[in-house]
Length: 349
Image 1 (cartoon, one colour):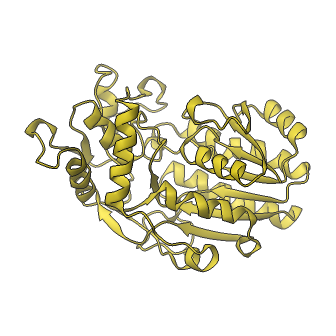
Image 2: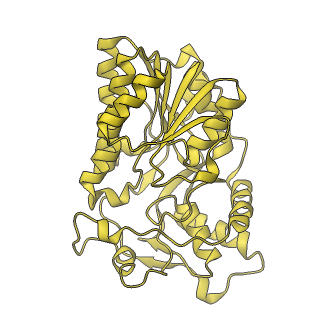
Image 3: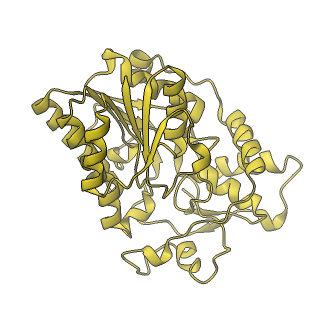
């Protein structure tokens, strides 16, 4: 099939492109390179650097490629930052998605696989199941919930299929560990690579479930081709949740099996606004429709990612303090300090 992957140079997108190419599909990838890397691009794919906020360019690109299947992974997935960059969040999520989805429908799209987010569940009582209503509590979650709902509406009107995937915190090789706003595993690891302590917001009792990339990509791929997943919303990830404090202990043990140095002990900061305390999902639907099962436990996955990150080397965090749209005393301390201390590394989920 002619397949388009947005966010193709990013973490999840590049792994998916590799699998699609390996399966013999004609793969087109786009990425604006704001969070992707040239090293991630599969040379056997057809890659174009493209900012999907540019409606005219996106429309022209789709008119030329005419994809039958769309995997949409491009996103500004900085959930915690979205309260301070709401315009950027909506433009890079909802509007960028519509700029690619609408011309795809016009050119005969058969199916879209939309990678959404657990943020659409908000602060309902976990474990979250797909039958729960969308109830986001932050700007990012609202943008993702809107993308889902619009997909359902347009599908009903224009007769294309869709599968909506809601991943659990995915981590692993190729993750952007220079991003200081998201991906807590990467943030912790990069701080230690830079020989600095990392930060934990609040008391660290927040609970999350973490998915290794090896336990995500195969099921994302299957969602594109298995008709059993048509017009379904599916959580993908493990049921086993851990606290952020326990995650921190596990990461430190990977780096310092004999004991951590005092100066590298994590530092706690005040809670971030609108942060959900507990977020993890049921797995029943993924098991039934996708055959999901966890094959990489968190400890093994952390060792694998740490090994890859050591080879990559420490990365300079890419703070966007100057790009915040709302700069108030609610901006997390680390983000504010970064303006004056650009070498400062770290922050938590």
